[in-house]
Length: 158
Image (cartoon, rainbow, N blue to C red; front, side, top):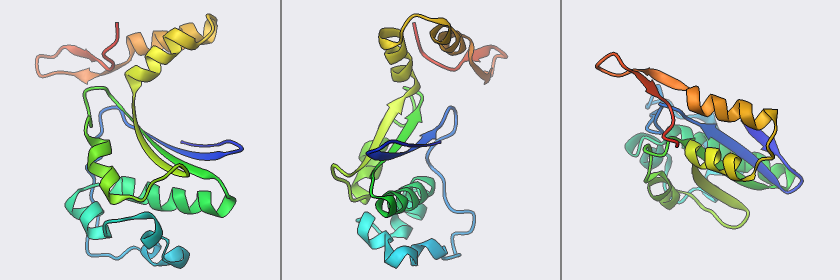
């Protein structure tokens, strides 16, 4: 999802059961966006493509950082790449990804959990039908069956 405000461009990568460890489908194919945008890749990354996308298996985050930060710069906005994951997943994603990217007050990468969003809604949203609907979703969302054939709740919430 992409959200635009008067000050920032937010690219939100929402994952439920999927992980961030993804490699390109064809690791031998050099992507054109690596040389495009006046070689924007050199302005927003510390590490090279092979280190990030192939060795570290962070290809998807690489693409989102490259393309989103370039777009934000073109329209004069700060850039935020938000990675939403389950609380028990990807606990170290900021530590794994941040050393590869150039950040600052104008460009940030952040891990947020679905459970943190739930808690924010519980504590801050006005009590109305919308709040009830989203909290019902959180309580009832499932992610399939475990090995014992038991239906698993998606979120670890009270």
